[in-house]
Length: 276
Image (cartoon, rainbow, N blue to C red):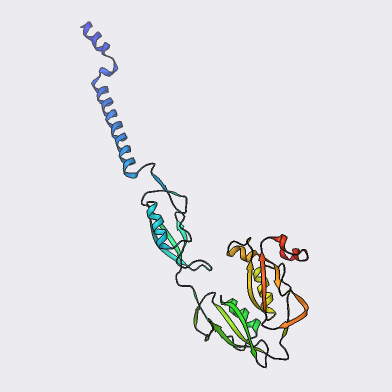
Protein backbone atom coordinates (compact mmCIF):
# COMPACT_ATOMS: atom_id res chain seq x y z
CA UNK A 1 0.00 0.00 0.00
CA UNK A 2 2.81 2.34 0.86
CA UNK A 3 4.50 1.49 -2.44
CA UNK A 4 1.34 2.45 -4.46
CA UNK A 5 1.09 5.82 -2.68
CA UNK A 6 4.75 6.39 -3.43
CA UNK A 7 4.18 5.67 -7.17
CA UNK A 8 1.25 8.14 -7.35
CA UNK A 9 3.33 10.83 -5.73
CA UNK A 10 6.18 10.10 -8.10
CA UNK A 11 3.86 10.76 -11.11
CA UNK A 12 3.95 14.49 -10.37
CA UNK A 13 1.60 17.42 -11.15
CA UNK A 14 0.98 16.60 -14.85
CA UNK A 15 -0.07 13.02 -14.05
CA UNK A 16 -3.38 14.37 -12.74
CA UNK A 17 -6.08 13.90 -15.42
CA UNK A 18 -7.77 17.21 -14.58
CA UNK A 19 -4.53 19.08 -15.10
CA UNK A 20 -3.88 17.24 -18.35
CA UNK A 21 -7.36 18.11 -19.66
CA UNK A 22 -7.03 21.78 -18.70
CA UNK A 23 -3.64 21.94 -20.37
CA UNK A 24 -4.99 20.33 -23.52
CA UNK A 25 -7.91 22.75 -23.57
CA UNK A 26 -5.52 25.69 -23.16
CA UNK A 27 -3.38 24.49 -26.05
CA UNK A 28 -6.44 24.02 -28.27
CA UNK A 29 -7.70 27.54 -27.45
CA UNK A 30 -4.25 29.00 -28.13
CA UNK A 31 -4.06 27.21 -31.49
CA UNK A 32 -7.55 28.44 -32.40
CA UNK A 33 -6.64 32.04 -31.49
CA UNK A 34 -3.45 31.94 -33.57
CA UNK A 35 -5.34 30.37 -36.48
CA UNK A 36 -8.05 33.04 -36.25
CA UNK A 37 -5.46 35.82 -36.24
CA UNK A 38 -3.73 34.35 -39.26
CA UNK A 39 -7.09 34.03 -41.02
CA UNK A 40 -7.94 37.67 -40.26
CA UNK A 41 -4.54 38.78 -41.53
CA UNK A 42 -5.24 37.02 -44.81
CA UNK A 43 -8.78 38.35 -45.14
CA UNK A 44 -7.92 41.96 -44.20
CA UNK A 45 -4.56 41.87 -46.01
CA UNK A 46 -2.68 42.93 -42.90
CA UNK A 47 0.43 45.02 -43.65
CA UNK A 48 -0.70 45.40 -47.29
CA UNK A 49 -1.37 49.14 -47.24
CA UNK A 50 -1.56 51.48 -50.21
CA UNK A 51 -0.72 55.17 -50.37
CA UNK A 52 -3.59 57.44 -51.48
CA UNK A 53 -2.48 59.41 -54.58
CA UNK A 54 -2.94 63.16 -54.96
CA UNK A 55 -5.96 63.65 -57.21
CA UNK A 56 -6.46 67.39 -56.75
CA UNK A 57 -6.64 69.63 -59.81
CA UNK A 58 -7.06 66.74 -62.29
CA UNK A 59 -10.18 65.83 -64.25
CA UNK A 60 -12.46 63.12 -62.85
CA UNK A 61 -11.70 60.56 -65.57
CA UNK A 62 -7.97 61.04 -65.01
CA UNK A 63 -8.51 60.74 -61.24
CA UNK A 64 -10.32 57.45 -61.83
CA UNK A 65 -7.40 56.11 -63.87
CA UNK A 66 -4.89 57.14 -61.21
CA UNK A 67 -7.01 55.55 -58.47
CA UNK A 68 -7.43 52.33 -60.46
CA UNK A 69 -3.67 52.06 -60.87
CA UNK A 70 -3.29 52.52 -57.11
CA UNK A 71 -5.87 49.80 -56.33
CA UNK A 72 -8.60 52.21 -55.24
CA UNK A 73 -11.84 53.68 -56.55
CA UNK A 74 -13.33 57.17 -56.62
CA UNK A 75 -16.79 58.62 -56.17
CA UNK A 76 -17.88 62.22 -56.76
CA UNK A 77 -20.12 63.33 -53.89
CA UNK A 78 -20.19 67.12 -54.19
CA UNK A 79 -19.23 70.13 -56.31
CA UNK A 80 -18.26 73.72 -55.61
CA UNK A 81 -17.47 76.72 -57.78
CA UNK A 82 -13.88 77.88 -57.45
CA UNK A 83 -12.70 80.88 -59.40
CA UNK A 84 -9.61 80.39 -61.59
CA UNK A 85 -9.76 76.60 -61.30
CA UNK A 86 -10.34 74.23 -64.22
CA UNK A 87 -13.96 73.17 -64.61
CA UNK A 88 -14.57 69.56 -63.60
CA UNK A 89 -11.23 69.27 -61.81
CA UNK A 90 -10.94 67.66 -58.37
CA UNK A 91 -11.08 70.35 -55.68
CA UNK A 92 -10.92 68.18 -52.55
CA UNK A 93 -10.49 64.49 -51.72
CA UNK A 94 -11.01 62.26 -48.70
CA UNK A 95 -8.83 60.50 -47.58
CA UNK A 96 -6.18 63.10 -48.37
CA UNK A 97 -3.11 62.31 -50.44
CA UNK A 98 -0.45 60.30 -48.60
CA UNK A 99 -2.89 58.46 -46.33
CA UNK A 100 -2.29 54.69 -45.97
CA UNK A 101 -5.38 52.62 -46.77
CA UNK A 102 -6.40 49.06 -47.70
CA UNK A 103 -6.76 47.98 -51.30
CA UNK A 104 -10.10 48.89 -52.84
CA UNK A 105 -10.67 51.88 -50.55
CA UNK A 106 -13.15 54.45 -51.84
CA UNK A 107 -11.87 58.01 -52.29
CA UNK A 108 -14.66 60.58 -52.23
CA UNK A 109 -14.18 63.66 -54.39
CA UNK A 110 -15.48 67.22 -54.44
CA UNK A 111 -15.03 68.72 -57.89
CA UNK A 112 -15.09 72.23 -59.32
CA UNK A 113 -18.47 72.74 -60.94
CA UNK A 114 -18.56 72.22 -64.71
CA UNK A 115 -21.13 74.99 -65.01
CA UNK A 116 -19.89 78.25 -63.51
CA UNK A 117 -21.95 80.27 -61.10
CA UNK A 118 -24.45 82.52 -62.87
CA UNK A 119 -25.11 86.14 -61.97
CA UNK A 120 -27.67 88.64 -63.24
CA UNK A 121 -26.41 91.32 -65.58
CA UNK A 122 -27.24 94.75 -64.12
CA UNK A 123 -28.48 97.76 -66.07
CA UNK A 124 -25.53 100.13 -66.27
CA UNK A 125 -26.94 102.53 -68.85
CA UNK A 126 -26.73 106.09 -67.54
CA UNK A 127 -24.18 105.22 -64.85
CA UNK A 128 -20.85 106.98 -64.65
CA UNK A 129 -17.84 104.85 -65.54
CA UNK A 130 -16.80 104.54 -61.90
CA UNK A 131 -20.31 103.65 -60.75
CA UNK A 132 -20.59 101.01 -63.46
CA UNK A 133 -17.21 99.52 -62.53
CA UNK A 134 -18.21 99.29 -58.87
CA UNK A 135 -21.53 97.65 -59.77
CA UNK A 136 -19.85 95.06 -61.98
CA UNK A 137 -17.35 94.15 -59.29
CA UNK A 138 -20.10 93.81 -56.68
CA UNK A 139 -21.84 91.27 -58.98
CA UNK A 140 -18.68 89.21 -59.49
CA UNK A 141 -18.20 90.52 -63.04
CA UNK A 142 -15.01 91.99 -64.51
CA UNK A 143 -14.87 95.51 -66.01
CA UNK A 144 -13.33 95.20 -69.45
CA UNK A 145 -12.42 97.62 -72.19
CA UNK A 146 -13.54 101.24 -72.10
CA UNK A 147 -14.80 102.15 -75.59
CA UNK A 148 -15.30 105.88 -76.09
CA UNK A 149 -17.69 107.39 -78.64
CA UNK A 150 -18.73 110.98 -79.23
CA UNK A 151 -21.46 112.10 -76.83
CA UNK A 152 -22.43 115.14 -74.84
CA UNK A 153 -21.66 113.48 -71.47
CA UNK A 154 -18.12 112.19 -70.89
CA UNK A 155 -17.86 108.83 -69.09
CA UNK A 156 -21.60 108.22 -69.23
CA UNK A 157 -22.40 104.55 -69.97
CA UNK A 158 -24.22 104.25 -73.29
CA UNK A 159 -24.03 100.49 -73.91
CA UNK A 160 -22.83 97.34 -72.17
CA UNK A 161 -21.13 94.56 -74.13
CA UNK A 162 -20.25 90.95 -73.50
CA UNK A 163 -18.12 89.22 -76.13
CA UNK A 164 -18.61 92.16 -78.54
CA UNK A 165 -22.38 91.82 -78.31
CA UNK A 166 -24.77 94.02 -76.41
CA UNK A 167 -26.06 92.32 -73.29
CA UNK A 168 -29.45 93.18 -71.87
CA UNK A 169 -30.08 93.77 -68.15
CA UNK A 170 -31.43 90.72 -66.32
CA UNK A 171 -29.62 88.19 -68.52
CA UNK A 172 -27.83 85.43 -66.62
CA UNK A 173 -24.09 85.43 -67.29
CA UNK A 174 -21.20 83.42 -65.88
CA UNK A 175 -19.43 84.88 -62.87
CA UNK A 176 -16.17 86.65 -63.79
CA UNK A 177 -17.37 87.39 -67.30
CA UNK A 178 -15.71 90.46 -68.82
CA UNK A 179 -18.10 93.34 -69.57
CA UNK A 180 -16.95 96.11 -71.91
CA UNK A 181 -18.44 99.57 -71.53
CA UNK A 182 -19.31 101.99 -74.33
CA UNK A 183 -18.91 105.47 -72.86
CA UNK A 184 -19.64 108.99 -73.98
CA UNK A 185 -16.81 111.39 -74.76
CA UNK A 186 -17.30 115.12 -75.13
CA UNK A 187 -14.65 116.80 -77.30
CA UNK A 188 -14.23 119.53 -74.70
CA UNK A 189 -13.64 116.99 -71.92
CA UNK A 190 -11.66 114.10 -73.40
CA UNK A 191 -8.19 114.24 -71.86
CA UNK A 192 -6.73 112.59 -68.77
CA UNK A 193 -3.35 111.89 -67.21
CA UNK A 194 -1.56 108.57 -66.79
CA UNK A 195 -1.27 107.63 -63.09
CA UNK A 196 2.08 106.50 -61.70
CA UNK A 197 1.41 102.91 -60.58
CA UNK A 198 5.01 101.78 -60.12
CA UNK A 199 5.18 99.71 -56.91
CA UNK A 200 1.46 98.98 -56.74
CA UNK A 201 0.09 95.43 -56.72
CA UNK A 202 -1.76 94.24 -59.80
CA UNK A 203 -5.35 94.93 -58.77
CA UNK A 204 -4.57 98.35 -57.29
CA UNK A 205 -2.63 99.31 -60.43
CA UNK A 206 -5.40 98.15 -62.77
CA UNK A 207 -8.00 100.06 -60.73
CA UNK A 208 -5.91 103.25 -60.82
CA UNK A 209 -5.45 103.03 -64.59
CA UNK A 210 -9.16 102.41 -65.24
CA UNK A 211 -10.25 105.11 -62.81
CA UNK A 212 -8.30 107.56 -64.99
CA UNK A 213 -10.41 106.47 -67.99
CA UNK A 214 -7.58 104.43 -69.54
CA UNK A 215 -7.36 100.84 -70.73
CA UNK A 216 -4.94 98.07 -69.80
CA UNK A 217 -3.43 97.01 -73.10
CA UNK A 218 -1.37 94.19 -71.63
CA UNK A 219 -0.10 92.83 -68.31
CA UNK A 220 3.41 91.40 -68.66
CA UNK A 221 4.70 89.19 -65.83
CA UNK A 222 8.36 88.25 -65.45
CA UNK A 223 9.58 84.74 -64.57
CA UNK A 224 9.18 85.33 -60.81
CA UNK A 225 5.40 85.08 -61.27
CA UNK A 226 4.54 81.36 -61.42
CA UNK A 227 0.79 81.19 -60.87
CA UNK A 228 -2.40 83.14 -60.24
CA UNK A 229 -1.63 83.75 -56.56
CA UNK A 230 1.77 85.14 -57.54
CA UNK A 231 0.11 87.47 -60.04
CA UNK A 232 -2.06 88.97 -57.30
CA UNK A 233 0.93 89.83 -55.12
CA UNK A 234 3.19 90.95 -57.99
CA UNK A 235 4.00 94.67 -58.21
CA UNK A 236 4.46 97.00 -61.16
CA UNK A 237 8.12 97.78 -61.89
CA UNK A 238 7.59 99.43 -65.28
CA UNK A 239 4.74 101.03 -67.19
CA UNK A 240 4.29 102.33 -70.73
CA UNK A 241 3.54 105.18 -71.00
CA UNK A 242 5.07 106.41 -67.75
CA UNK A 243 3.00 108.11 -65.10
CA UNK A 244 2.79 111.90 -65.17
CA UNK A 245 0.47 114.59 -63.82
CA UNK A 246 1.61 117.08 -66.43
CA UNK A 247 1.32 115.04 -69.63
CA UNK A 248 -2.24 114.60 -70.88
CA UNK A 249 -3.50 111.75 -73.07
CA UNK A 250 -6.85 111.01 -74.67
CA UNK A 251 -9.32 109.01 -72.62
CA UNK A 252 -9.41 105.37 -73.68
CA UNK A 253 -5.66 105.25 -74.42
CA UNK A 254 -3.76 102.05 -73.64
CA UNK A 255 -1.30 101.39 -70.82
CA UNK A 256 0.99 98.35 -70.55
CA UNK A 257 2.13 97.21 -67.11
CA UNK A 258 5.16 95.06 -66.27
CA UNK A 259 4.95 93.13 -63.00
CA UNK A 260 7.32 91.15 -60.78
CA UNK A 261 7.67 89.61 -57.33
CA UNK A 262 11.30 90.75 -57.18
CA UNK A 263 11.31 94.01 -55.21
CA UNK A 264 14.87 94.70 -56.41
CA UNK A 265 13.36 95.55 -59.80
CA UNK A 266 11.10 98.25 -58.35
CA UNK A 267 12.60 101.77 -58.57
CA UNK A 268 13.73 102.99 -55.16
CA UNK A 269 11.34 105.91 -55.16
CA UNK A 270 8.48 103.39 -54.98
CA UNK A 271 9.93 100.75 -52.66
CA UNK A 272 7.79 101.88 -49.73
CA UNK A 273 4.64 101.75 -51.88
CA UNK A 274 5.40 98.21 -53.03
CA UNK A 275 5.65 96.96 -49.45
CA UNK A 276 2.17 98.15 -48.47
